[in-house]
Every structure is written in structure tokens, then in C-alpha cells.
Image 1: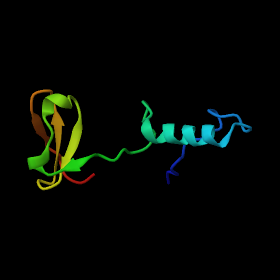
Image 2: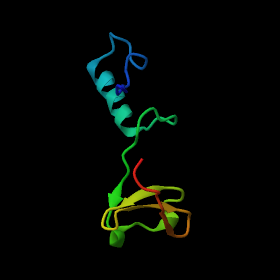
Image 3: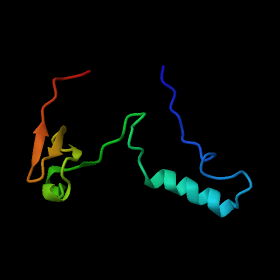
Length: 87
């Protein structure tokens, strides 16, 4: 069993820091994603007609909700990722 771990702000803020500084550090945790993932990450999903331009999102993965598939941007177009079935 894997227990999800929530990041701690203790390394970022002194215990006697003002409340606004503690709130700011909590906001940072919402805005930034760690570079070394420690848990599954939720993918963005959208219908095929609303996919953004692939050139704007190189090497990104989305869930194409109305097609029930994954797509990856290789810089010029969205390419369908073929999965082999359930894990």
C-alpha cells in the first residue's frame, strides 16, 4: 500500500514566520510541480475539437476525452498513443 505524502512547509518557513509567509509557501506548493515525481500526476483532458495547437505544447500529453485515448505533441501535431490494454 502506498500512502500519499503531502509536502511539508517546515523546510520553507520558520515556525515563528508571519502567517502571510506561511500562506505564501502553501501557494508555492500549488503552483509548482516537483521535477522528480513521487506520485501519479493527473493529465489534462479535453475533446478533440478543443485541442490546443500542438506547436504550443511540445512533448506534452493530454487525454482526448471524446476519443477515450491519449495524445502526445511532438511539436507539429498531436499523435495518438496506442495502449496495450489494462495494466
